[in-house]
Image (cartoon, rainbow, N blue to C red; front, side, top):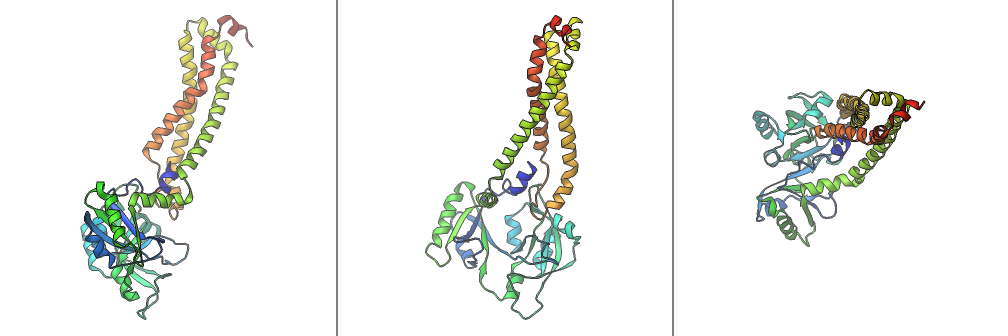
Length: 350
């Protein structure tokens, strides 16, 4: 469940009122920045801004993290889930070379507010004749409002990018906030109709649909992980069922003695079922405890590939529930046989 949550990062918190407008051909194709005014004037649009992927290198090519050029005041208004102090917000707006980074990204590289961060460009080679590297001042560190918010991204001023590049008049994509989520489909259609038959046609979808399609490029991870889990649970069921059956066979005489002493058939049934549940739940508690201990370390190791990785509380509850179900299923047949067992036959069996 942690892996599934990581692969589907952000889908559950994707704004119901947010749309993404990209180039119809491909996400990597740029769009004219002049489209922004047309999008903002579309009926039903409350707010709109643009973002551009930077894709630079910090110290080493292996130090990958998302870097985007944005308009700070607009971006923070549309994405309130990025939480940071108000003074950092204003300082970012006022600082031309200012940038903000997620908490996990800052912890990864040991960054502090005020640090100077040089990033070598790979796509956006500067044309101003200055130093090749872009140098940013870290003016803020944001945190996610919930655990599902990516805290490994790096944002800086779009105007700083354009100063270094010379204003090329193009951006990566547009984020659109609609007035009423119920009209999102109509607004998306209207935006795309504005730019139909233009040199740069657009494709507008909900943020949730876009992120889901992006995640599914690696396959239906939920179905794959569920298939693996079902196989594992089936094997566990066989192991526990075999253990319970062997336990009942080895203690047939003991069960006969219990019935001789006055234990009812129902009492014997419950005792055997309880043994199966305790066996399964005890192992599950140990497994879940080890997973919870290992999760923070795994999150750091997987941070480059899965920025969001944690054990949901629902997974722990589900784990215990499945353990109880496995215990009942594995102990069901042995418990039934123990209940139906005749006292004389039980005492004679060796």
